[in-house]
Each structure stands twice: as structure tokens, then as C-alpha cells.
Length: 365
Image (cartoon, rainbow, N blue to C red; front, side, top):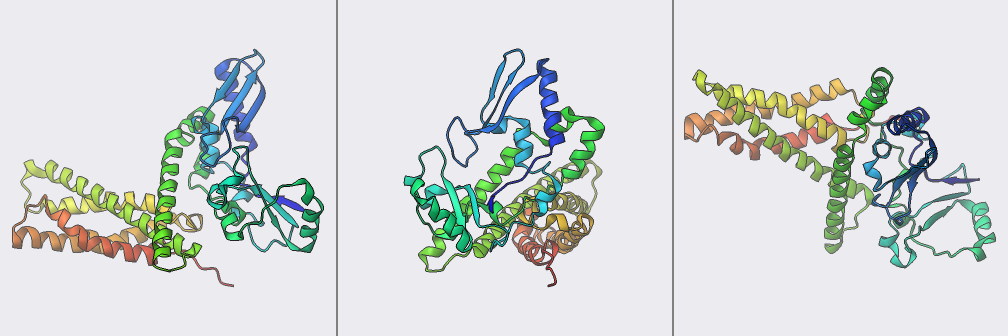
């Protein structure tokens, strides 16, 4: 029995709607279609991937790179994979259901650049004696090189992890039925969303590489679990900084709008307004990107309420107390006070959010 590592299978109905939309735009029928073609080489960046099709009017269309194509963007965002792909029962090691696993060897350059000829390198995992016998039988017809297992799977997360269930999936299919493909493609399957997700992922990889190098220099072995935790924490800090900036901007805008009223405690109104809106901002990014693992199992309402409770102390009580100290006692400007609050409120938010608000549910075994 042989298996291959699969990212996920997209919905046939969405693909049919995508093809119908192209036919309608071109006023013709597609007679030949290539998805994820690698005419421009083979690498993990996705820039070499493309879409190519021909119509019954002998029109030929090439779309490179792939993220310029709406369907590819939706596929890479995991919005319309089949339901079982979000909870695949075969994403586990050791393998008891097959003898051999085959896959693309993503990340081959970090293992040995000599094996990357730009045309594709395969990864083969052997499970048990029978699998080894099968590989030995064809060894003379292959160019084989044994590598460390952990290095081999580092860039192949689909071996062990199912695709992450998109929060937008249910809304996507509901609107697809009610509003049609053209409208949902513009809303959910656009290049800008994919580029942001990719940039966030690249940032995480850079952070991971820096941390991995730093730990190696001081003699600490960086396990995948440690790297994931550190990477998550730094991303959480980035969201925290952006949240502080959003809160500050909203605070200034609210103060400016209240100026004609001459309200004595206008800074308190500004703090509360900034709190309500900035928590929604941080909840969105933390729940969708930083703590995405297990997000589909968390109650949105409950998590959002926890987020508000987490920020309530630092966002209202602590900020108002500190602002009163800076403004009424020390005499600082009310426009400067929100910035002075950040070093005190941010660490509190980090700790509570990390260990309570977005804490993953532990399964009882």
C-alpha cells in the first residue's frame, strides 16, 4: 500500500463555478485546462506555479504567477476544501495503513542543494519491512540518498497536520449559493488576502530561523515544539504592538471629536472607545493567525468575551487609573498619556491571553 502527502482536495462545485465564470467572460468554452503547472521551474515559493487553458475558439491563456488566479488563491487559503480534509485520519506517524509514503521534497535546499535540479525532487518514507523490500526491489532504477527524518519532513507539514479549517468557509458556501460565484470570488478569493497570509507565514519562518540560530549558538537544542512556541509568542507581540497603535489612533481621533464639547473627562471616553474597537482588532488577528491552531474548536462568542475580559483590566481600569496619574497628578499631555500606558498594559495582556483566552482545549484521553 502506497500513500502520498496531500494538502487537500478542493470542492468540485467551486471548480465548476470557476470554469463557468471564465467561459462566460470569454464567451467561449474551455477545452483544455492545467492547474498548478510548473513550466517556470519547481520550488516552494509558488511563483513558478500557474494556470493555463485553451478554449474552443483556439484562444490560449496563461496566468503566472498562480496567486494572480482567484481559484488558486482560494485553494491556498483552504476556504473550499472538502470537509474531511480538515480532519484527515491519515495525518499521523507511525503509519499503520501503508508501506510507503511519497511526496514532494519541499525544503530540499536546506538538506542538500545538489539534489535540486529545478525539475522536482521526491521524498520517500518507508514504513516497516515490507516497504523496505519494495524500495530495495527498484533501487537500481532510482537515485537514492538517505536523509534525517526530521529534516525531511520539516517543510512537509501536511504529513502530520490537516488543513486548517477556515473561519470563512461556512460563509463562503452560504454566499456562493445565495449571491453567486462572481461576488464571492471578489470577496474571499483575492490576491491581497493570499499575499497577506503569505507575508505572515514568511515572517514566521524568518523568526523561526533567527531563533533556531540563536539557540544553536548558546548550545540549546531547538525542538519543533520550542520553535513553534517562540514563533507564536513573537507573532503575538507583533499583534500586541499593532493593537497598541490602533488603540492610540482611535484615542486621538475620539479626543479630537470631543474637543468642541469641552467635556472634562474626555480622555475616559476616548479610552473606552479605543478599548472596544482595538480589542476587536486584536481578537481577529490573534484568533485567525497567532492562535489559529484549534480555532475551529473554540467558540467565537466565548473567546471574544474572554478577549474583552482580558483587556478589561488593562484597557479600562488600569489605563484610566494611569491616565489620571499622568494627566491630573503629574501634568502630562492627555495626548501623550496613552503611549505611557503601553509598557504597563501590554505585558498583562500577553500573559492572560496566552494562558487563558486562546488556550487550546486539551483532549481527555
